[in-house]
Length: 118
Image (tube, rainbow, N blue to C red):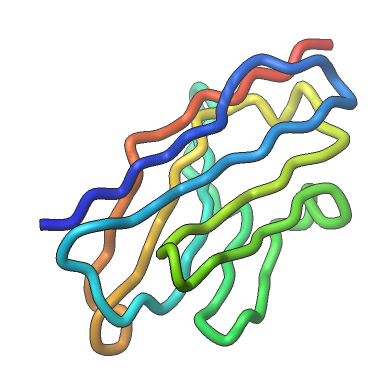
């Protein structure tokens, strides 16, 4: 069994920073891409950032230059450093981990509320 646990959400004023963490444990092997998605009320879930096993990164346009994704392979953990936060960043953030051959296994975290006040 695999557990994916997120931490680090919360309430912050515009311009502030937060760091999200997501750790996978249990019977997980060969982790491929790790990423963060978000879903705001009334909107579809969207990709925020992802990082491959080789360290290549990809960001949604609105967060480029403000958010940084990183991973610690020894700890099966992915991080999202969020700086210069804006009210429009308010959403539930979900960690996603693809693992196994060709990333066939798809795991999700429980979701972390990030609220940015103006």
